[in-house]
Length: 79
Image (cartoon, rainbow, N blue to C red; front, side, top):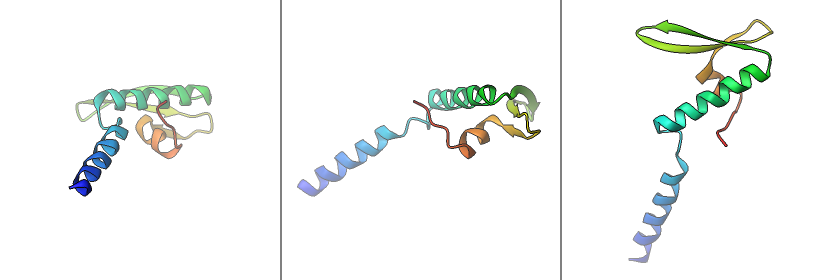
């Protein structure tokens, strides 16, 4: 019985760690990436693609990266 209680507690703890699965978490992550882009001297531009608006970071070095991908590749985190 104690084993099951421990498993439930572990599951609850892990579920509490996952904030980026929510729409609010995704918006926060996107904002962190936008801020990072601008701090690096880049410019964020929006594009309409397949009925969705996507944001791209145009970095000074000439690289263009989607904001969500920038968040993932640069190891950025929501604080």
